[in-house]
Image 1 (tube, rainbow, N blue to C red):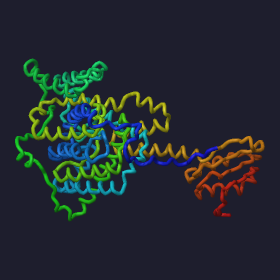
Image 2 (tube, one colour):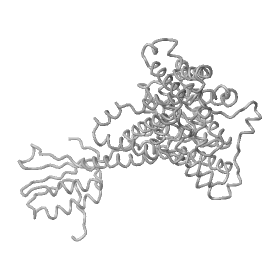
Image 3 (cartoon, rainbow, N blue to C red):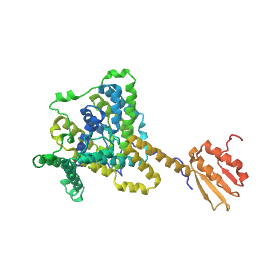
Image 4 (cartoon, one colour):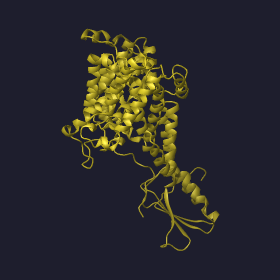
Length: 539
């Protein structure tokens, strides 16, 4: 009988090209899908970049710079085909506190540059393997939680009753409200015009999912989000002449800083203040940013790989180097820290993105928006973009996902649902941490119970019980083995066989030796095969 390993080995690090079973779409045949997907990601990313800047207490342009660098630079250096990088909501509290600690935003930028250098070094040292140790149940829980948060956070914008920035993803908000009380308040302050535009936008997106649209050669090339934006702008213009009281307030429209020439661009840029290098605070802050940004990026690309229809693998060490490069450039230009972001990446996948060209194109569109398209983009109602994110959120947290996890049993369902709950009420890293602890509990429990094969064998005399130990027996198996030995009744003939075992921890050998010395007192005949005896205390 083949023995089972007690400890489950982690999967091999992701590296190298995709396998032949998961073909990589070529540049030529995917461009027709990548460009529309890049447009959708741009429409999703634009308000998020602005909102994260506001949430972080940074200049408004800082989030857009990070988005441009994430799209144009990180996408080219990264080995991920579908991941989209940019400013992340998960870092807002760190950025806000970091600016306060350093005293100025210019001083904070030095920490961003140093964090990028640390990430690049981590990639060279192959620290990206840490991303391989997150179980599927936790990754799925993270995706489902983000989907729920997107839905709950977009409802106020969908109704036109939220005056906060666009991406306040924390459950407890800076204005003293929480996710649910914000929804309640928005229902009492809703704008009819925003609600009409939101409903129409959602209807268009649902229509665009229908098969007859996807079968049409021309219509399937037009992203539903683009139709939504055009219709939303036209509807708001129509309200001016038909229902003036329904006109969307400026606070519920996209808001880009006015730029008329290159002088305005350079006037809005902020550069690092290198004088802070003489203090110790900047180095601790840089280390904090590097660790949190690296974890978020590794988790995101792991999740993206699971969502990828072609099941391509992202080299984690290369991803760390790509994110590090992005952070160094973003910090030098006055941008926020950059990470791989699951919201934008999910929008990319759901919109049909095939290669990294979609992320690159979204970065170019952000750059063009900053330079040329401000007046037009400032006409887009946030309720229309909220409808786009509602669809993205639903696809991440479909009811079928919860049913699938339930059918897989408690070891898969409990870490999954707890990860969802903790992320929903706290933040991403706390939720993943708690989910990981629970998943490890079930893994250790399973390993502890698989220390040996316990059965009666016909080849032995009647009444003989043969216990064949697994290949590796660690201290984690001590309790299971001790409990099993204690259960043997007088008159039992027990063969404890370590023939197929490579290693046995001293803790387990000590437990076996303790029982061997009292077995005859209990009327148990214990026979040890290929198991060394050890000295124990008191004997």
